[in-house]
Every structure is written in structure tokens, then in C-alpha cells.
Image (cartoon, rainbow over all chains, first blue to last red; front, side, top):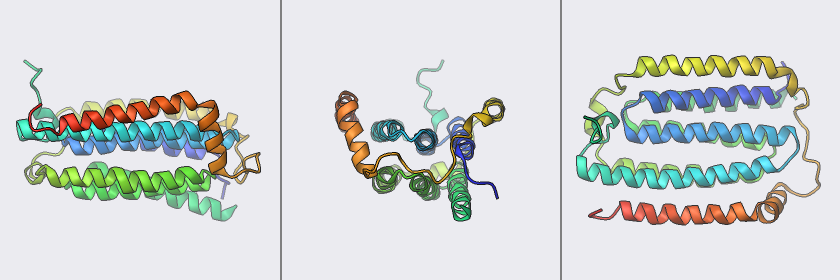
Amino acid sequence: MHPVTTIHYLVLSAALLLIGTVGVLTRRNVVIILMSIELILNAVNINLIAFSHAWKNINGQVFAIFVITDAVAEAAVGLGILIALFRNKETVLADEIDLLKW
Amino acid sequence: MLIDTVLFYAFALLTLGGGLLCITRRNAVHSAISLIVSLLGVAGLYLMQQAEFLFAVQIVLYVGGIMVLFLFVIMLVNLDDAAKERQFNRQWVIALVATLAVAAEIGYFLYRGKDAFHIAEAGAVMASTEGNVQQVADSLFQQYLLPFEIASVLLLVAVVGSVIMAKKRI
């Protein structure tokens, strides 16, 4: 077996990013779209930690903390918007929310 | 060395399998549970790379915080009707083609650049004798003090925004 190097982590993070992208682009349920965004942000974090470990530099981990902060803020506001939307339009399906379309 | 490899593939399987289940399940609660599995796999990967603080943050914040928030919202909005309907939108073919194009690009670049990663031998430790949490704190509160404060303001904005969004009348 080959030892695990940074390229393994990069391939894994790319795969997770693509899974998240597919989820964002194809699902109709807004809750699952928000979960897919969390997957994408986790892929970014894997990348940052892999390079932090490879170059023995702590800055990558600090940036990962900032990314997690952004993910928390995004989830809180996104779910708040979702609740307001459900109260007004009675739907959580992304393609039925088309007020700006004509 | 062998145990590292085995653990890496186990955590990678958890991460990718959880992610795939998350975006394919019909029931949103099942998706959330799969996402928890995926996040725990990512936490294991952090631990393998000596990022102990982020390992703890990942479990406490993501699995304990964000996922509980998601489950609350799933219970708050009634998703039973949505689970019976079509799960994928009309543009899913275009979306898959676009994602495959991105996958080909990333794969090509990783293949071309793979020789640049020979420095990343596994099992290396951080140069300092300090613990991981201390290193992160030193960097966060000295070099990145201003971004840290800006992040706290961002969280304040997010809290105010979600309270406004949850009001009866916007």
C-alpha cells in the first residue's frame, strides 16, 4: 500500500466538492441544497488542513476556522430565510420560488 | 504507516459515502443523518493531520450545532409533501455535464501537479513543541486578530439577520 500523501487528500476534497456541487445544482429541496453547501465548505477545509500539514504551517488551520465561522453564519441566515419563505409561500422546493421570473 | 493508510481510506469512505447518501435521499431527515456521518469522517481526517483543535470544533460545532439547527428546521417546516414530489429539477442533465467538466479540469490539474506534492510525506509533526491549540491561538490572536474581530462582527450580523427573518411580519 502507498503511504497517504497530500495528493490523496486533494483528490478526496475534489470528490467531496463535486458531490456538493451536484447536490446544489440538481436537488429541488432547499434544505438539502443548504446541506450540500456545507459539504462544499468541508471540502475546502480538507484542502486547507492538508496543505497546513504538508507545509507545517498553522495558518491553514486558522483559515479553516474562518471558513467554519462563515459556514455557521450562512447556515443560520439561510435557514432563517427558509422559514420566512415557508411561512409566505408554503413551499420548500427551489424551482417553485420564482417571483422574479416572468 | 499501514494503519494510517487504512484509517485514511476508512474516513474517506465515510466522508464520500455520507455525502453521496446526503444528496440522493428522498427524506430530508435521512439526508441530515448522512451529512452527520460525512462530517464525522471529515473530523477523523482532521485528527489524522494533527489538527486536534479543528477536530473538536468540527464535532462540537458542526455535528452538535449546525446539524441540530438543520433538524429543527426540518421539523419546523413540513417536508412530507416535498418528499412525495420529484426530487431533482429539470436541469439535472446540464448540471451533471457541467460538474463532469469541472471534474475533468480538476483531475487534469491534479494529475499534472502530482509531482509537486512529494514534500507531503505522512507522519510528519508540526515543527514546534507547543500543542496544536496553543499554536492556533497564537496565530489567531496575534497575526489574525483583525480578521478574528471581523468574523465576530459577521456572526453578530448573522444572528441579527436570522432573528429578523424569524419574525412574524418581515
